[in-house]
Amino acid sequence: MPEKKKFELEFLLNTSPKVLENMLFTPSGLSEWFAEDVNINEDIYTFIWDGSEEDARLLTKKSGEKIKWQKKDDEDEGLDTYFQFHYEIDPMTKTVVLKVTDFEYEEDMEEAQALWESLIEGLKRTLGA
Image (cartoon, rainbow, N blue to C red; front, side):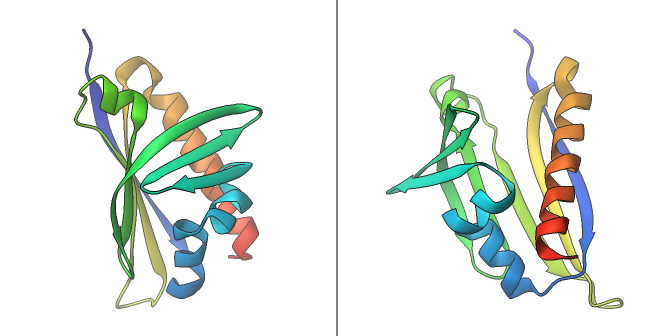
């Protein structure tokens, strides 16, 4: 059985960490750019797109740094995968650097990376960054 492979993408955002954190950590922020709607029940986030839902368990939430989930389907299959938003401020430019980490099967890698690039473009438009 093929394994999912880890990939990371990095984006520069002209926004404040506080504003970005709101967009990454809250259901209302995530529903502005990531999914149509986001619901939380304890540590399970339900992301809703076009009538379909995907559940993910919150693994880490560290203010000023990162938020990380594991898709429930991957968890149920025993896969050691996750998707994460990690951000920091570039000390030279004072620009926020957002790193997206995810896992995907090799044959779906290009499509997954293109999807993340599109999503982050939407985030930039929402932020006005």
